[in-house]
Image 1: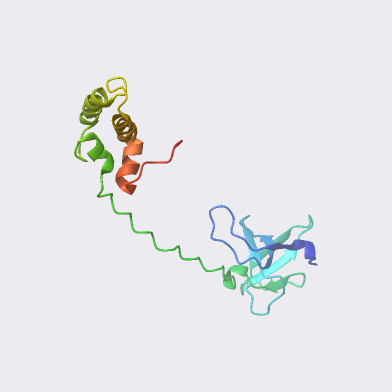
Image 2: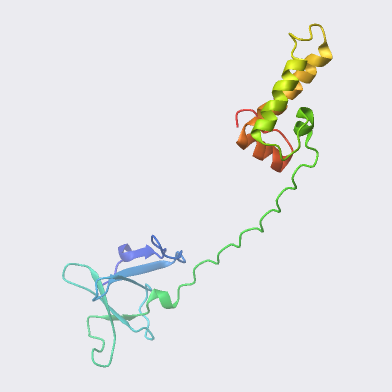
Length: 176
């Protein structure tokens, strides 16, 4: 009546909880839905299972009005014995990193950390006019300071990079 080809693993489908993975016989109920039953007949079960003319496994509830018929086998619905794997508890969330207190880029431009984009732009332009290598030929210190001011402006003028800098205290890696 039953074959090993009838056995499929218990597994939650789309939108269902994960199954235990044990072999189950999937049957069609009278309502047309699928019901998994344990593979071996069970005298304590409340489900009658048989194979219809088309070869489909069918199931129904055994009641006093509809007792077990000779061609049916009494089986236990798998949901009564299925023990899905326990969910792994996710690790606790990491505490957020403290905001940088150094504010080195803000200090390079001479603006407070709460400065607006216009304040940052204005400070950069003023420092760029003073420190630009064309305005200070031969002054290596001014050229280095100009590079540092330009790096600070490049980070603080981009809202995404500025947010990253404010959270981590470091300039974002190039290409991000």
